Length: 164
Image (cartoon, rainbow, N blue to C red; front, side, top):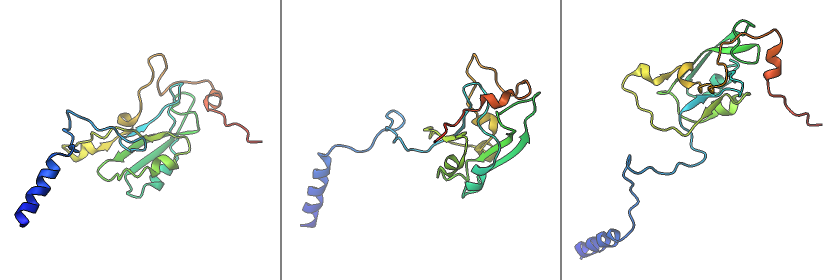
């Protein structure tokens, strides 16, 4: 009797639509809120959004982010503020993809994109440096570092609207 019930269950499931997809030939649609690989963004003028404040590192519960800040100068300008991230590293083996770093960033410099194909053959490959994380500059825009006139960097910061 139990054998008949087992075969009935098996035949019932054979007629249903399959839920398994054949990855990598077929890819599943990612949700809008999916959190994948980190990216450091730039402003439209090519300057880096990261100001080296280390709030992302402080917010990270897994202690996966390390930021070392340095001062901007008029001869070498990286970001529109007074400081920039001289060193920015994320240990992807420690990251739990919670998105707290993204939430803590005041300039919206760090963003978790939709890239999920992350594999490493060596532990050193799992440490993403600033060069690996930064988005490339558009072809018609000067990259960083760049030389600027004194006081010019304040005009390149997007201004907030007055709430009053």
